[in-house]
Length: 517
Image (tube, rainbow, N blue to C red; front, side):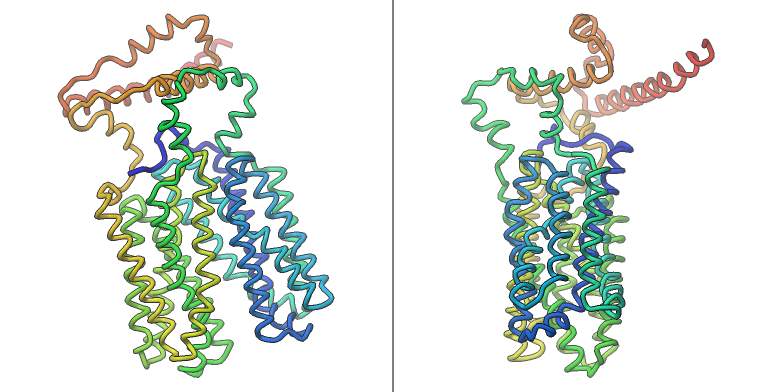
């Protein structure tokens, strides 16, 4: 599996990292809350300018289309300039864009400002990159799913609040969205810290001379760190196709479900609103289920089963004539499946990233999804005119194709079926027959550089006392046995002793010093 290199993986979560993640969650919540506030009132606002149904569709498509284009450069720029500047850029643009929409004087201005707002509507891919920067791989799916739940929560709360604000004035939701963007921008400017490893290294002036050390020939770099770090694995492109197909299946519900329930089951608009609210709430429950069980089941299996379940539900729904049976399928089955598929897809894309291409790969995931959000409503709207059940059959077919692609990946790369654990790196040292690593000079340099940075940060004069440092490492890292079972126990023993010694040093030594003084 050509996933991100283990050497690029973040360490254990620190308090500062958790604070940064919470700020990202808050910023994304404010961003999407702003979007959802104006969703229910946009048709009425456009109607004041005499917009036709086609022109109303253009208002929605303009935002989605520009978000898709923005995704292409937001992730790439975040890889180059850092995550924090791009998140702040997005929130500031959201503030300005919604403010301009609220001040529009005619349809042409409103359409232009919707284009403008869409340019800044791609913070989600950069936020995913921040989480991937900070969270170790085994815990990453939980945090990505939590962000999905945050987005769902914003879309649950936003429409109701937006409709209520519109009672004062039709423009108030736009101004409220602008205010949320401004607040998120200020919070990010003040409290959010940069997470991109490369950008952080560039800011470290004390170690800048180490980056200039040349220890690898140009020919070695061709297939090594410089080359592979930016290369996008083939699995990512397959996952992008899966993301587009699953999103096409999902848009059958977001675009046609309300009309289907009104025409087939004679529900009124208020009842449809309650169904949508219950459906979105069930999606959050799906997110929570993924968070709880992601450490016990492979993320690919979540995607596999979620896609299959939603596929079957889509193919069955048009045959149901009982209202409560149809609502059960839509709310419980489709809602929960969608809540699982979205974070699973994000986590799988993130698993193939490195610090140099993280924003780019996660932006590709966002582009794949936004492409479906543009094509899907047009496709499903066209086939709905032929038969009311066709959008769900088409969506089910897309989901089945996605299911087949996931099965193909699991057959092609069997290691994808396993669940990543916190002890993976230890198991690679201690389980199975010993096979020597193929070590290149850049690997020696990477280890030496990482060790030197760590010792410098911990105030060790390792350059002055290098022979003593090497002697110490020789003592604490004794040779391991060739027998697999013995090596496993040896590594466990060394780890236990190391952790106990570390804790004793932190607490026991500090206490003794306090007593002496």
